[in-house]
Length: 275
Image (cartoon, rainbow, N blue to C red; front, side):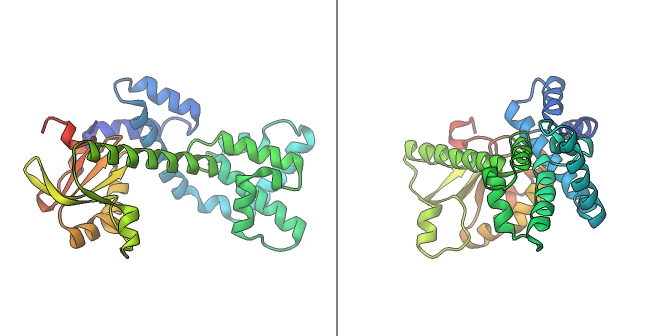
């Protein structure tokens, strides 16, 4: 469901006042019961990622990295079974999986005497059993499964949800006998950057001709939408003509201001809506 900019501002303001944890998400749902869980979760994730980007640098100074590592070592000496890394991340309002990465990189560097590759660290984060220290492996695992917005588990979930909505949209197009070319077909034909579906026969939506459809399994806030316009939507428009973007979890309704220039926003498959 589209939200006005004022409604979105209320949600964002509330999120700024609660902890970026699962408890904070439950508080958000209780405060805005009329909004769908998927919409609130998407907004929660986006606002949390903005917070992490703003504060990321201070957690990666040499002083901060060393302090976190020493605090981790002292914590597991006292109680190896306690969720030391998770509690530390929550205390400083930093993503648990990113805190785990900091400590893991410092641990591997101390063990090997050199800066570890991103490939190695990513592999260990995806599969903590590869970490040659059982206590740290358990600590990293706790961070991964308790992180709402970052980490390999979240990445897999987001990828699966995005694919699920693309499949759903494809089934809707087939049901309506709308002829299309999917992204994988377009890539096979040599296109490097394409929308999810190009319509072989354009359709009209609310009086606008649509040549392509892009599926976004997220909420369309101002920051993400502007990035998509710059990186994707306008290039699609230049190459294929006017198109439609579906933000399945809603969007800020004021962002739907480019429809007269050829980019429409909807929160559902428009041929099922009353248009």
